[in-house]
Length: 174
Image 1 (tube, helix red, strand yellow):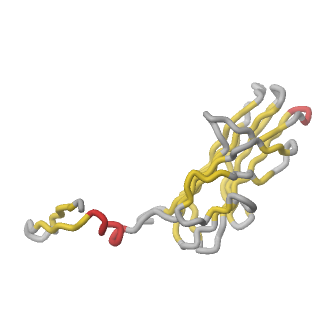
Image 2 (cartoon, one colour; image 1 turned 120 degrees about the vertical axis):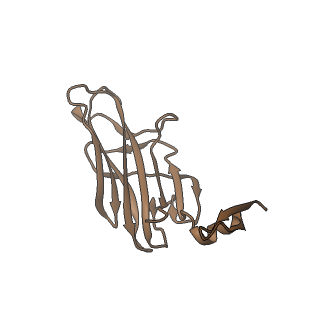
Image 3 (cartoon, helix red, strand yellow; image 1 turned 45 degrees about the vertical axis):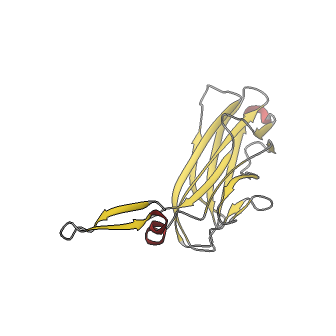
């Protein structure tokens, strides 16, 4: 086992402990999950829509529902760093605005947007994050909104370089 030597601060006495015991004293930052969207999701123009983040990279405690509700319910009270991003895309260079939101218990908690003004493009990626105080049964979800000129076909797109993703982890020491 890996040993750590620690000065106890009281006269220079050194103590030792195995590294695996630190988790007992410090704790860990779980539950935690990280997931992404595996295929494009068609959305109505300028409509707030829950993002179907359906593919888990990891889910330490099985607390992210990647199949039906696309929500994280931690099961453990604490402060959580929650993050997400969407890539909005249109079939023409007419994307006017894209918004991404974290919802807590069904209501908007944090919003981030990209408004290209007159420089319309066909895609844009926007990220949102927040530290959220959560009870064991609170939940968070990721929502997005794309506004395209002339109601063109709009999707939350899939890209290897800028995917739609969602994740969270418990913050230690907060």
